[in-house]
Image 1: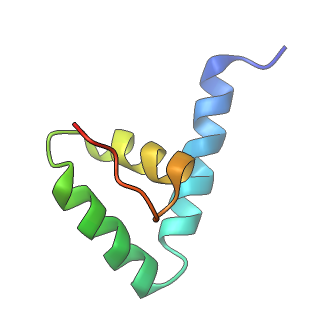
Image 2: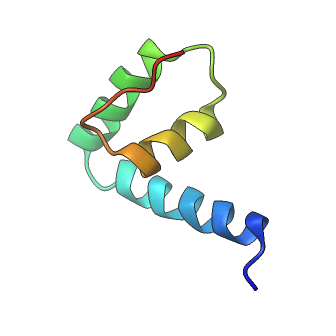
Length: 59
């Protein structure tokens, strides 16, 4: 059985790799993060990993 911590850790690592693939993706992440400034960095990264760059999460 996979633990919740392991799943979140894997999502975090994948999101980090995706966001840092290119300067364009990093800038897209920063634009999205600026719209969700109330959320901590790690939560924003997980949201990006889960939803991609097409959608922003409303707060």
